[in-house]
Image (cartoon, rainbow, N blue to C red):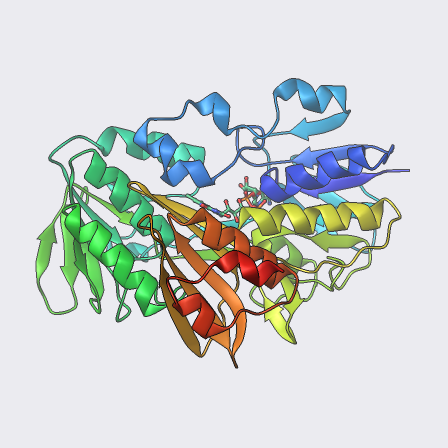
Length: 401
Ligand code: FAD
């Protein structure tokens, strides 16, 4: 018996290994990662870790002793280079390793501008790994000029850290507004105002033509020809799922490795979890980029491998920290047709998303109570009358009865 091999030692890979052992799985488990570090959490990378507020040790998901104690073989600094589905083996370094089950947990790679547009010049950065942050941290000196391409959560979090450290920050968003893909105009307006009041310049509906500079980035040129000088440039323009191993092995891939509701790929001995997986959801497929999804999906796969048939029913949640604002998101707003905004008495704000009058998601800014109630409702498949939610005097707790 060969046991389980997990390709990718990140959030999903680690969660799968831990859950297998917790469920009493006794065969070998090998967790293979191409980064030099044992599995760690990424969310603080663009928040407290970049700010210098969190020591590196706090990022690790488990102490290194854990893997020895639970007989999880951790192989680091070495990519899985190929899969032979027919012989149930993978290639790693010069070795060929056999598996009973293979879990692909390879995550996603940050996008950059192409090299011919300056996207690979020294002084340009992405924000994905500990190594990325360690490389960029020395740039964060007061007074330096930073251009951020992309107004999604990662771009905005980096802007918040940089503004706090007194850098001069310009954030450029190609879409008509920041957070276009992930949040309603009301939530985007809240964060636009928050950043502007902290001195960040936000340019929306603005195309980046290229990064300027020859030996090193000196700024960016916009589609209109305007040049913005910068000491360094950050790309926060989304990620591409790491599907190359799966595709080469002939597995079904559609913006992510296709899985069924149990996390199984088109090969019965290969599973996929986390940012690299495309899963069935509300009649179509989605890829979810969040810690909650990576953990839950990996744990479902572990249960199935351990012989407990389990179906994954995603209960999406997410968060972001910017300045003194904690954003918490419950549900998925895809396909919403209306929103209701609610002001809490203590200054918090929440935006509630509806599709055909049914509650599907909520963004809560410094309003943990609204988040908790919305999450409980959405997870239970219950709605909340827009009139009640929109009435600031109403008591949300009555919704839970
Ligand atoms: P990863 O954690 O990326 O792990 C995949 C690992 O596989 C990586 O180490 C990769 O190098 C490795 N790998 C790839 N190919 C191979 C190979 N061939 N062989 C071996 N190893 C390989 N989510 C939230 O819910 N809330 C947040 O606030 C939040 N903030 C974030 C901030 C940042 C800066 C980033 C980058 C992400 C954030 N996320 C957040 C998203 C969250 O971190 C990811 O969804 C989560 O890490 C996905 O886990 P994963 O295991 O699928 O991928």
